[in-house]
Image 1 (cartoon, rainbow, N blue to C red):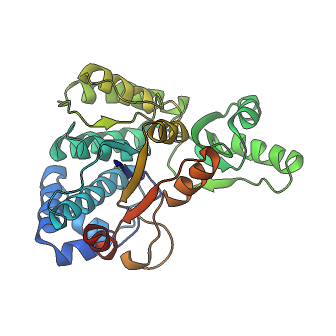
Image 2: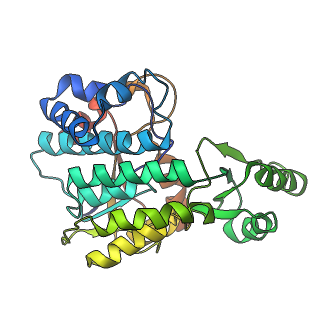
Length: 318
Protein backbone atom coordinates (compact mmCIF):
# COMPACT_ATOMS: atom_id res chain seq x y z
CA UNK A 1 0.00 0.00 0.00
CA UNK A 2 1.60 3.25 -1.16
CA UNK A 3 1.56 5.99 1.50
CA UNK A 4 1.69 9.77 1.06
CA UNK A 5 2.48 12.24 3.86
CA UNK A 6 1.16 15.78 3.23
CA UNK A 7 1.65 19.15 4.94
CA UNK A 8 -0.46 22.34 4.64
CA UNK A 9 0.75 25.87 3.98
CA UNK A 10 -0.03 29.31 5.35
CA UNK A 11 -3.57 29.74 6.56
CA UNK A 12 -3.33 26.61 8.72
CA UNK A 13 -1.74 28.45 11.66
CA UNK A 14 -3.64 29.37 14.83
CA UNK A 15 -2.80 30.50 18.40
CA UNK A 16 -2.43 27.43 20.62
CA UNK A 17 -1.00 25.34 17.77
CA UNK A 18 1.11 22.53 19.22
CA UNK A 19 0.34 23.22 22.87
CA UNK A 20 -1.34 19.84 23.37
CA UNK A 21 1.71 18.01 22.01
CA UNK A 22 4.15 20.10 24.03
CA UNK A 23 2.33 19.42 27.27
CA UNK A 24 2.04 15.67 26.66
CA UNK A 25 5.17 14.51 24.84
CA UNK A 26 8.80 15.02 25.76
CA UNK A 27 9.76 14.62 22.10
CA UNK A 28 7.53 17.55 21.11
CA UNK A 29 9.05 19.69 23.85
CA UNK A 30 12.53 18.93 22.50
CA UNK A 31 11.47 19.86 18.97
CA UNK A 32 9.95 23.18 20.05
CA UNK A 33 12.87 24.05 22.31
CA UNK A 34 15.31 23.21 19.53
CA UNK A 35 13.36 25.43 17.14
CA UNK A 36 13.57 28.34 19.59
CA UNK A 37 17.35 27.90 19.81
CA UNK A 38 17.78 27.82 16.03
CA UNK A 39 15.40 30.71 15.29
CA UNK A 40 16.58 32.98 18.08
CA UNK A 41 13.13 33.70 19.52
CA UNK A 42 10.61 31.88 21.73
CA UNK A 43 8.51 29.94 19.25
CA UNK A 44 6.67 28.27 22.13
CA UNK A 45 5.23 31.57 23.36
CA UNK A 46 4.53 32.72 19.81
CA UNK A 47 2.74 29.52 18.78
CA UNK A 48 0.78 28.95 21.99
CA UNK A 49 -0.01 32.50 23.15
CA UNK A 50 0.81 34.90 20.27
CA UNK A 51 1.19 37.77 22.77
CA UNK A 52 2.13 40.36 20.14
CA UNK A 53 -0.39 39.24 17.52
CA UNK A 54 2.47 38.25 15.20
CA UNK A 55 1.65 34.65 14.35
CA UNK A 56 -0.02 35.71 11.08
CA UNK A 57 3.04 37.66 9.94
CA UNK A 58 4.75 35.62 7.25
CA UNK A 59 8.19 35.72 8.88
CA UNK A 60 6.71 34.04 11.98
CA UNK A 61 3.97 31.94 10.37
CA UNK A 62 6.34 29.86 8.29
CA UNK A 63 8.73 28.62 11.03
CA UNK A 64 5.79 28.15 13.42
CA UNK A 65 3.93 25.92 10.96
CA UNK A 66 7.06 23.97 10.08
CA UNK A 67 7.75 23.32 13.76
CA UNK A 68 4.20 22.14 14.41
CA UNK A 69 4.20 19.89 11.38
CA UNK A 70 7.51 18.28 12.31
CA UNK A 71 6.35 17.84 15.92
CA UNK A 72 3.16 16.09 14.73
CA UNK A 73 5.18 13.90 12.38
CA UNK A 74 7.82 12.88 14.91
CA UNK A 75 5.31 12.14 17.69
CA UNK A 76 3.39 9.97 15.22
CA UNK A 77 6.58 8.14 14.31
CA UNK A 78 7.46 7.61 17.96
CA UNK A 79 4.01 6.26 18.81
CA UNK A 80 3.90 3.77 15.94
CA UNK A 81 7.52 2.72 16.31
CA UNK A 82 8.39 3.80 12.78
CA UNK A 83 6.10 1.18 11.25
CA UNK A 84 4.43 3.72 8.95
CA UNK A 85 6.78 5.66 6.68
CA UNK A 86 5.97 7.51 3.45
CA UNK A 87 6.63 6.30 -0.04
CA UNK A 88 5.92 9.87 -1.17
CA UNK A 89 5.66 13.27 0.51
CA UNK A 90 4.08 16.56 -0.57
CA UNK A 91 3.32 19.95 0.88
CA UNK A 92 1.26 22.95 -0.15
CA UNK A 93 3.54 25.99 -0.56
CA UNK A 94 5.37 26.31 2.80
CA UNK A 95 4.39 22.68 3.46
CA UNK A 96 6.78 21.56 0.72
CA UNK A 97 9.66 22.23 3.13
CA UNK A 98 8.10 19.98 5.76
CA UNK A 99 7.68 17.36 3.03
CA UNK A 100 11.42 17.58 2.32
CA UNK A 101 12.16 17.14 6.04
CA UNK A 102 9.82 14.15 6.27
CA UNK A 103 11.55 12.51 3.30
CA UNK A 104 15.03 13.13 4.72
CA UNK A 105 16.11 15.68 2.09
CA UNK A 106 16.45 18.49 4.67
CA UNK A 107 17.38 18.32 8.34
CA UNK A 108 15.13 20.18 10.77
CA UNK A 109 17.65 22.90 11.67
CA UNK A 110 18.34 23.73 8.02
CA UNK A 111 14.65 23.79 7.18
CA UNK A 112 13.97 26.21 10.03
CA UNK A 113 16.66 28.60 8.82
CA UNK A 114 15.47 28.39 5.22
CA UNK A 115 11.79 29.07 5.96
CA UNK A 116 12.67 31.81 8.44
CA UNK A 117 14.57 33.64 5.70
CA UNK A 118 11.87 32.80 3.14
CA UNK A 119 9.18 34.30 5.36
CA UNK A 120 11.24 37.41 6.10
CA UNK A 121 11.88 38.05 2.41
CA UNK A 122 8.29 37.39 1.34
CA UNK A 123 7.03 39.82 3.97
CA UNK A 124 9.64 42.49 3.25
CA UNK A 125 9.74 42.44 -0.55
CA UNK A 126 6.26 41.25 -1.46
CA UNK A 127 3.22 43.25 -2.45
CA UNK A 128 -0.47 42.64 -3.08
CA UNK A 129 -3.05 40.13 -1.88
CA UNK A 130 -4.66 36.85 -2.96
CA UNK A 131 -8.19 35.65 -3.77
CA UNK A 132 -9.54 32.14 -4.32
CA UNK A 133 -12.14 31.57 -7.04
CA UNK A 134 -14.38 28.51 -7.54
CA UNK A 135 -13.55 28.68 -11.25
CA UNK A 136 -11.35 26.54 -13.48
CA UNK A 137 -7.85 27.66 -14.41
CA UNK A 138 -8.41 28.30 -18.11
CA UNK A 139 -11.47 30.48 -17.45
CA UNK A 140 -10.06 32.66 -14.67
CA UNK A 141 -6.52 33.10 -16.00
CA UNK A 142 -7.29 35.45 -18.92
CA UNK A 143 -9.65 37.45 -16.72
CA UNK A 144 -6.98 37.82 -14.04
CA UNK A 145 -4.28 38.77 -16.52
CA UNK A 146 -6.54 41.46 -18.02
CA UNK A 147 -6.27 43.26 -14.69
CA UNK A 148 -2.54 42.63 -14.09
CA UNK A 149 -3.20 39.75 -11.71
CA UNK A 150 -1.62 36.31 -11.97
CA UNK A 151 -2.52 32.73 -11.12
CA UNK A 152 -0.97 31.80 -7.76
CA UNK A 153 -2.39 28.34 -7.19
CA UNK A 154 -4.17 25.57 -9.02
CA UNK A 155 -5.72 23.67 -6.14
CA UNK A 156 -8.55 21.82 -7.90
CA UNK A 157 -10.24 21.79 -11.31
CA UNK A 158 -12.76 24.27 -9.92
CA UNK A 159 -10.57 26.16 -7.43
CA UNK A 160 -7.95 28.64 -8.60
CA UNK A 161 -6.10 31.26 -6.54
CA UNK A 162 -4.90 34.51 -8.10
CA UNK A 163 -2.75 37.31 -6.74
CA UNK A 164 -2.33 41.01 -7.44
CA UNK A 165 -2.70 44.48 -6.01
CA UNK A 166 -5.79 44.94 -3.89
CA UNK A 167 -7.34 47.37 -6.37
CA UNK A 168 -6.69 44.99 -9.28
CA UNK A 169 -8.16 42.04 -7.38
CA UNK A 170 -11.26 44.10 -6.67
CA UNK A 171 -11.72 44.60 -10.42
CA UNK A 172 -11.38 40.87 -11.06
CA UNK A 173 -13.82 40.08 -8.25
CA UNK A 174 -16.30 42.61 -9.63
CA UNK A 175 -16.04 41.16 -13.14
CA UNK A 176 -16.58 37.64 -11.86
CA UNK A 177 -19.51 38.78 -9.74
CA UNK A 178 -21.19 40.30 -12.80
CA UNK A 179 -20.48 37.48 -15.25
CA UNK A 180 -20.39 34.33 -13.10
CA UNK A 181 -23.33 34.32 -10.66
CA UNK A 182 -22.77 32.32 -7.47
CA UNK A 183 -19.00 32.13 -8.15
CA UNK A 184 -17.88 34.71 -5.60
CA UNK A 185 -14.24 34.98 -4.54
CA UNK A 186 -12.75 34.50 -1.08
CA UNK A 187 -10.03 37.01 -0.19
CA UNK A 188 -7.16 35.27 1.60
CA UNK A 189 -5.27 36.65 4.59
CA UNK A 190 -1.73 37.00 3.26
CA UNK A 191 0.95 39.68 3.29
CA UNK A 192 1.41 39.57 -0.45
CA UNK A 193 0.55 38.02 -3.79
CA UNK A 194 2.56 34.87 -3.10
CA UNK A 195 3.58 32.61 -5.99
CA UNK A 196 3.23 35.41 -8.55
CA UNK A 197 5.56 37.95 -10.18
CA UNK A 198 5.20 40.09 -7.05
CA UNK A 199 7.59 37.64 -5.34
CA UNK A 200 10.42 37.89 -7.90
CA UNK A 201 12.48 40.30 -5.78
CA UNK A 202 12.11 38.06 -2.72
CA UNK A 203 13.12 35.02 -4.78
CA UNK A 204 16.29 36.71 -6.06
CA UNK A 205 17.42 37.35 -2.48
CA UNK A 206 16.27 33.88 -1.40
CA UNK A 207 18.40 32.13 -4.01
CA UNK A 208 21.58 32.75 -1.99
CA UNK A 209 20.01 31.05 1.03
CA UNK A 210 19.05 28.02 -1.05
CA UNK A 211 22.53 27.82 -2.56
CA UNK A 212 24.03 27.63 0.95
CA UNK A 213 21.60 24.92 2.12
CA UNK A 214 22.60 21.26 2.03
CA UNK A 215 20.12 18.72 0.64
CA UNK A 216 20.47 14.97 1.07
CA UNK A 217 18.71 12.89 -1.58
CA UNK A 218 16.86 9.78 -0.40
CA UNK A 219 14.71 7.12 -2.05
CA UNK A 220 11.45 8.76 -0.97
CA UNK A 221 9.69 10.68 -3.73
CA UNK A 222 8.94 14.36 -2.99
CA UNK A 223 6.43 16.28 -5.09
CA UNK A 224 7.28 19.72 -6.44
CA UNK A 225 4.70 22.53 -6.36
CA UNK A 226 6.49 24.20 -9.26
CA UNK A 227 6.41 21.27 -11.67
CA UNK A 228 3.40 19.32 -10.41
CA UNK A 229 5.56 16.18 -10.62
CA UNK A 230 8.43 14.81 -8.59
CA UNK A 231 11.58 16.63 -7.59
CA UNK A 232 14.57 15.25 -9.44
CA UNK A 233 16.94 13.49 -7.06
CA UNK A 234 19.68 16.06 -7.50
CA UNK A 235 20.29 18.92 -5.00
CA UNK A 236 20.86 21.62 -7.63
CA UNK A 237 17.50 20.83 -9.24
CA UNK A 238 15.73 20.85 -5.86
CA UNK A 239 17.17 24.28 -5.09
CA UNK A 240 16.10 25.61 -8.49
CA UNK A 241 12.55 24.35 -8.17
CA UNK A 242 12.19 25.84 -4.68
CA UNK A 243 13.45 29.13 -6.12
CA UNK A 244 10.90 29.04 -8.95
CA UNK A 245 8.15 27.93 -6.54
CA UNK A 246 8.27 31.32 -4.88
CA UNK A 247 6.99 33.20 -7.94
CA UNK A 248 5.12 30.51 -9.88
CA UNK A 249 1.71 28.95 -9.15
CA UNK A 250 1.38 26.10 -6.68
CA UNK A 251 0.21 23.18 -8.83
CA UNK A 252 -1.39 21.27 -5.99
CA UNK A 253 -3.97 19.42 -8.05
CA UNK A 254 -1.18 18.25 -10.37
CA UNK A 255 0.72 17.04 -7.31
CA UNK A 256 -2.30 14.98 -6.27
CA UNK A 257 -2.78 13.64 -9.79
CA UNK A 258 0.85 12.54 -9.80
CA UNK A 259 0.48 10.84 -6.42
CA UNK A 260 -2.73 9.12 -7.47
CA UNK A 261 -1.01 7.95 -10.64
CA UNK A 262 1.61 6.29 -8.44
CA UNK A 263 -1.16 4.29 -6.77
CA UNK A 264 -1.26 6.11 -3.45
CA UNK A 265 -3.80 4.35 -1.24
CA UNK A 266 -3.36 6.16 2.09
CA UNK A 267 -2.72 9.83 2.90
CA UNK A 268 -1.66 11.23 6.28
CA UNK A 269 -1.95 15.00 6.89
CA UNK A 270 0.32 16.53 9.55
CA UNK A 271 0.08 19.87 11.33
CA UNK A 272 -1.89 23.08 11.27
CA UNK A 273 -5.67 23.29 11.47
CA UNK A 274 -8.67 25.42 10.53
CA UNK A 275 -11.90 26.36 12.27
CA UNK A 276 -12.61 27.69 15.74
CA UNK A 277 -11.51 26.40 19.13
CA UNK A 278 -8.34 24.80 20.40
CA UNK A 279 -6.23 21.98 18.93
CA UNK A 280 -8.83 19.28 19.63
CA UNK A 281 -11.51 21.22 17.74
CA UNK A 282 -9.56 22.07 14.59
CA UNK A 283 -10.24 20.52 11.19
CA UNK A 284 -7.48 19.47 8.80
CA UNK A 285 -6.60 22.11 6.26
CA UNK A 286 -6.20 19.92 3.17
CA UNK A 287 -8.89 17.29 3.78
CA UNK A 288 -11.57 19.03 1.70
CA UNK A 289 -9.25 19.32 -1.28
CA UNK A 290 -8.31 15.65 -1.00
CA UNK A 291 -11.99 14.66 -1.06
CA UNK A 292 -12.76 16.84 -4.08
CA UNK A 293 -9.65 15.61 -5.90
CA UNK A 294 -10.84 12.05 -5.43
CA UNK A 295 -14.21 12.93 -6.96
CA UNK A 296 -12.53 14.70 -9.87
CA UNK A 297 -10.16 11.84 -10.68
CA UNK A 298 -12.13 8.80 -9.54
CA UNK A 299 -9.14 7.66 -7.48
CA UNK A 300 -9.96 6.39 -3.97
CA UNK A 301 -7.68 6.82 -0.97
CA UNK A 302 -7.85 6.38 2.78
CA UNK A 303 -7.32 9.75 4.46
CA UNK A 304 -5.87 9.95 8.01
CA UNK A 305 -5.61 13.31 9.84
CA UNK A 306 -2.71 13.73 12.30
CA UNK A 307 -2.95 17.39 13.31
CA UNK A 308 -3.28 17.22 17.10
CA UNK A 309 -2.48 14.85 19.96
CA UNK A 310 -5.78 12.99 19.89
CA UNK A 311 -5.78 12.39 16.14
CA UNK A 312 -2.10 11.44 16.11
CA UNK A 313 -2.72 8.86 18.82
CA UNK A 314 -5.68 7.45 16.92
CA UNK A 315 -3.67 7.30 13.68
CA UNK A 316 -0.75 5.57 15.37
CA UNK A 317 -3.04 3.05 17.10
CA UNK A 318 -4.74 2.21 13.81
